[in-house]
Length: 421
Image 1 (tube, rainbow, N blue to C red):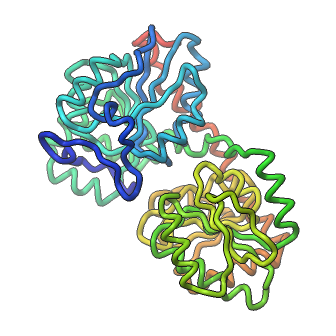
Image 2: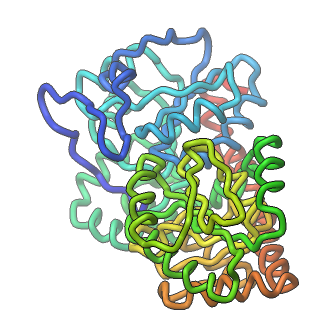
Image 3: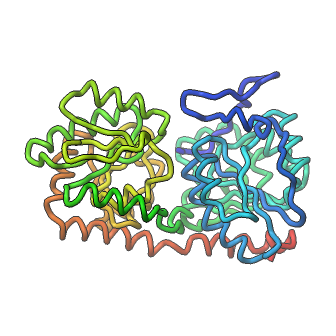
């Protein structure tokens, strides 16, 4: 996200969450969104961690691990707002003392029901949207609250400064703000969070993405020595770029294989239709249980939770969301698995990470899709250069991997205050 927007409550009186085309609502769990949890509150201390969507929820995993390790009786509730992030958390949280629920919609009844049920002892809010009813209720209840892994773009900062009284009132819920950079810490201090400091980015502390060994062995055996690249976490408009680049590459590399990975697996059929319309690119779909044959040019990986498999298989990764003005996706994930990263001009959600990796020679930035085929082909053709680039990015990630420890040190006073540790 590009900032910290304050958004109005969705809908209005009588609002009910419904499934959307993007899969952002789960009708079977709508009671959670309405502040009516059915899971019982565990006994003892409970920390509530809110992480809006996939990127934030993955970033919080190292922090969850450290919190659990300092107090053997502690429970952690992680909330997110999307089906994709909910599925990831169900599989990745280190249960049984850490578990997932959907965040309630920002309506007074839902918020009050949520807080009355869970009664958290501490709230950690990750680089997320500001929901006014939720934050106001936390403040009224006197629950200690910290803003963690905070980001605040220049545009959002300017917008907040136009309404200083509103900003100060809303932000008064936070006893501290742990920002990703000093610039952002300074902005948050100006807006009203006096105890703001730069800690670093929790995304650096993430462990390498997991993989199913059997799935990796089966797919590795199937593709053999074919030159492979992935366009990962694509959004509408980027699949056409991937198709054009791969078509160009096939002229000189007829055995090349593209792993095409839509950010939202629910778009799988739309991407399949696009591939079929392009013609000349035989493909199969992962969601149907297929494996690519020698004659397949594209493997449409429209499944969830397999990025660890994809990055291990593909020596070159093109980051989706970066060739459209969407802010990009996390380059640390492929870097930790030695896949050389190419990204487009729109990496503003990971600006500091991308800049540090670029300065170290760890990523290859492009100004647009025109040079994509040549960039991928160049890396595939030069294994030493490709490995050097991937190694430089991995070194940057490992050098900054202590962010979660720094966050824990900064949170120590709040943890002590509520009897954790």
